[in-house]
Image 1 (cartoon, rainbow over the protein chains, first blue to last red):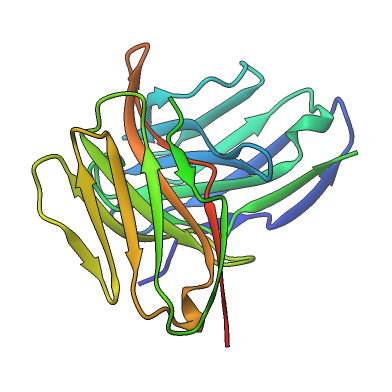
Image 2 (image 1 turned 90 degrees about the horizontal axis):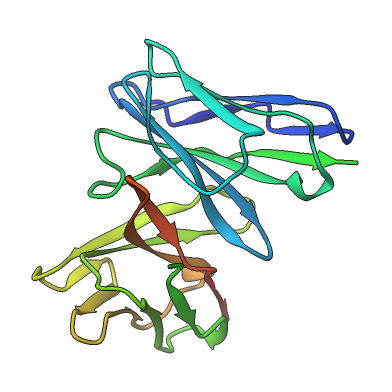
Length: 114
Length: 112
């Protein structure tokens, strides 16, 4: 059974640019959550999608957005990049609710903003 | 609302025991534990539910004290493979959103 796949694994952008990250969940999983991981703040929840709808969101500015497709694949977009957006972005899938079930994490997309 | 983990880091020799604590200022309904090895994705260890039993994952067990709003992870007879950063997560409802909020992690190093 394939795990959670995230692309690209590494990317470098400059301030002001935008970036799109992709996540393919485990087959059959309908919930996809996104987390930002930094050394100082740890794992911070961005948002969760379920059946193509944003079900929950964290406390990030509107520059951070996402979407989910009918095949459960998800993308997140960060516009007008800032230096502080440099981080590892992790996607996690679960069968249903991430609050009561196991999350399966991808290896992440490491974004560097110069 | 972020749970507080202690200690921030711990260094052990193989075979020694360790305890990692996770505390919350709010009532806990569930506590989730994950381990992340360097350069890898976090991996699920266990979920403890309010009123539930103590859980185990190999030689790692955890307890959930509702009164103290705290969970503890017990690593017994540690192995080299236990090295990594351990995160606890708690379920939070805020502004109509439900989310799993993680602590900042406890870095565990097991040396031969």
